[in-house]
Amino acid sequence: MLSRIESFLLNLAAAAVIGLGLLITTSVVLRATLNSGIPDTINMVRELMVAAIVLPLAATAAARGNIVVEVLSERLPPRTQDWLVVLGSLVGLLALAPLIWAGWNEAVHTLKSGSYFFGQLSLPKWPGRVIFLFGVSFCWLRLAIQMVGDIRTIRSGGRVLVDPSKHSPHEEV
Image (tube, rainbow, N blue to C red; front, side, top):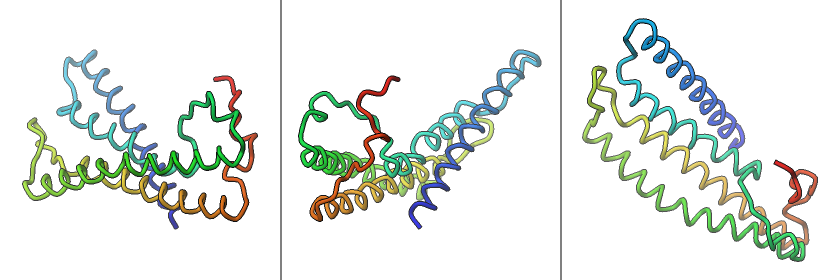
């Protein structure tokens, strides 16, 4: 069920990126041709950027697609490498916790106050705040589930990073 939600959030992020492209392109074309533009473009772009960045976090964590820098860890024993993956998940959980707390406070405050962006369209602020909270919360949930699964795998004698071909420390970028 969680993977279906992650896939949905990933698709929403892709739609946000497409929306960003269309919005910016249309605005630039209107400025260049008609000396006009789309009202509140900056606010819409800002809110769509939140969706494009935050919504795919859980899917990225599930795919273990986070950016990693391996200088010393690749030289450590496989068991130690697995525990470093668990440590990375724990650090991620601790780092996301204050973001969730702050996101919750901001979302609740924005919903209660009915805040909106000043501009021609008077767009509400709450959608971006709720999207941020939703994306970060699902990433936290994915990391927690993954960490528990990784610990179980290590305790049962298995490897966390089973297929080294999917993650080669010597890949060229």
